[in-house]
Every structure is written in C-alpha cells, then in structure tokens.
Length: 445
Image (cartoon, rainbow, N blue to C red; front, side, top):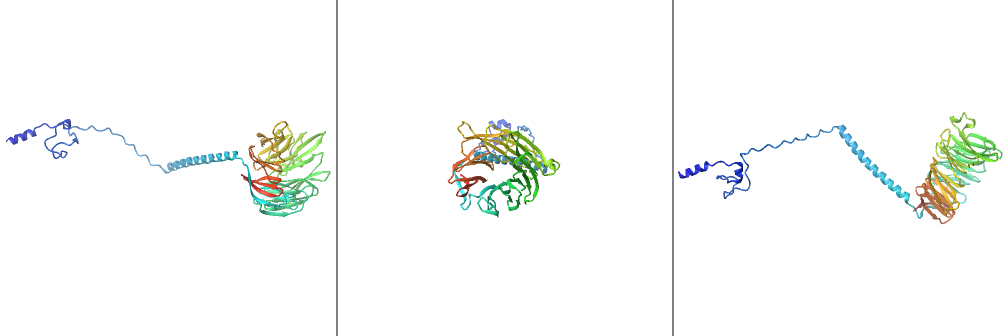
C-alpha cells in the first residue's frame, strides 16, 4: 500500500508549463534526451503548451515572363552595338596615337633599298606615275617599278623631250619640234606630228592632250585624243586674245583652261579663258564659256586641281576657280613680297618668298584650296627645286635633300654623297634619288 500511495502522489503532480519545463525540474520518467544517469541533456525541449505565433507571410516574386524572339533579338543587337562602339573607339584611339607619333617623328638618315648605276642620268628624266616611275630620254620612254624593274619600254627620237604626267597618263613632246608621243600605264597609245613647233603640251587624267603651237606669227591651241587624232584647233593672235602662256585640261577632258598675256597701253594684262568642248559650249563663241581679265598681272602657270577646281598662279599670288562645266572665279590671295617659288597638289597651294632682313632666307606659306592659310614657316635651306609630292613638301639642292609634311614639320634634312639631279616621292616612305652616278630608291630611317 505504501508503494501505491507513493505512485499516486507522483501521478498527481501538476503538469509543467513551457517556462517551467525550461527552468524547473524534469519529469520523473526518463525521456530519450536524458542520459544514462537520468539527468536532462542541455538541449531544451519544445514548449508543448505554448502556441507559436504564425510568422508574417512574405509575398514571393513572380518569376519573370519568358522573353519572346523579338526581345531576345533586341537585347542581342544592343549588346553587339555596345561591343562594336567599344571596339571602334579603341581602334580610333590607337589610330590617333599612331598618327600623333608619326606626326612628331623625324628621321636622321636614309637607307638605300634599290640602286642602278646603268642609268644615263645626264639625258634621262624621271617622273612619278601612279606609284611607278616614268622614265624618258631623247631615245624613248619606259615605265619601271619601285624596284627599278622595267614594265614596258618604247623607242622614239626627239631633240628636246619634255614630259607631262597626270595620273596614269603621260605625254612626251619635243619642245621646239613637231612630234608628240602619248602613253598610259600599259604603254604606247598614240602619236602626233604637228604642223608647227610645239611650245607646251599637257595631258588630262582621261588621256586627252592640249598643245600650244607656234608658227612665228600666230599661235594655235590644238586638242587631241589619247590616240593622237585631232579633236579641235583654235588659232590665236598676239593682239586677240594674246600669247598663250600655259594650258590645262579638266580630268574628263571636257574643259580646257588657257592663260593669255598681252600688252594694253603699256601695261601687261592677262586673260584666263575656259573652253568647253561638250554640249554646254557648242553655242558659245569659240566655245569660251567664261573668261577673266587681270590688268597689270602676269599669270605664267595654270593647273587643274580636280574635276571642278582649277588654279592660276600669278606673279602676286593665286586665284582659284570652281565649277565643272562653267568655271567661276573664286578666292584670290595676293602677296606683297616677290614670289620666288610655287608648288601645289590637289589640296594645297604653296608660295615661297625671300625674307629681307631676317635670319632665315625664306618664308613659306601654304594654303588650302579655299584660300585659307594653313601654316607659315621661315626656313634657311638654300634649295634649287621645291615640289609637293604625295602630301609631302620636298626640297633639294646639289648636295642636300629636305622633307616636310603638309603642316610644315621637318621630317628629314641631310647631305647626300654625290650630286643630286632629282628627288621625289614614289610611295610611303619611299623616294627616288637621282644622282650623277646612278639612281637610288631610298627609305628614311
């Protein structure tokens, strides 16, 4: 009975609450969390009598809607565009850096790449022709590569040959003679025997040739096809419109530009005329579509600078004309100093005049074809020849050569072993140096 009472008392104990279960004594009966000694483990039992408060529900984000084909394509295009912009920007930055380095770079020596000591440099002349070298003499003409290898060769006989090259076309005229030979990059195209002596001949980029002829009393300006056939002839007189000083032809051969000189009341006067041999000029007197008179001015040289732009070099500056069918007078630039040299290409016009009382011998002014001054430079090189060649300004005398870029930065100035007869550019950092003892293709280093 004593044992039963004891069990009854044990069963009547008040059940523990959740807090009490955590802080008070454990129940008499062993649980799985008790050790072998009957003591409670450190792990707390969950409070069975306390109802857990429900946690606040968080809204789950809905998964993004799948992209359709147009969206995927649009994203792809934007990504490609961004990558392209970055790549182009990097390339442009690299190009600008290279150009700046090239702009500042100067050379101190040169290296001979090719040489030929078999040339008759006394009677042979050389002109750059479309990346190759046009070579002519009283005995004939030929075209050679930068490696001085012959592409073609033609024979003729002249006393005083003078050549004019324009692009891939060339004409060789016997000055004070009566024969002309026409060529292109592939060789001979035609020849002409004139009735009067030849004063000057020019060729267009299309191969048409204009020649000034003189019979002692009158002058003629004849127009020929590339095969030598006569297209037109025009007789001129000293008093009307004057003596022809120079002639030039537009690229397509449609317009011929002529500068005349005559004396009016004791003053020298120049007249620049444009002849149109196309439909535009057929109803005009003598096919002259425009003409300009300049009193007290001498215009010894004219040239076409492209299909619709031409240049008149005057003794006091220059004048630009613009227009393809009917050229009109544009900008005129006048210089007060005496001009000693001129040079030009399709984008630049250069004038050189002496410096009186200055340390430097000369001043060079270079303009664009709109008549704006690009740069002015004083220099002290005693040159005998100056030219613009493939965006470079080249000067030389018998023992020195000098190279400037088209912004007046000096790239090279040095002496040469031998006597310089000619010097011009034939490619990127490639120059033809004609000496009294042979011909060299050189590279600046």
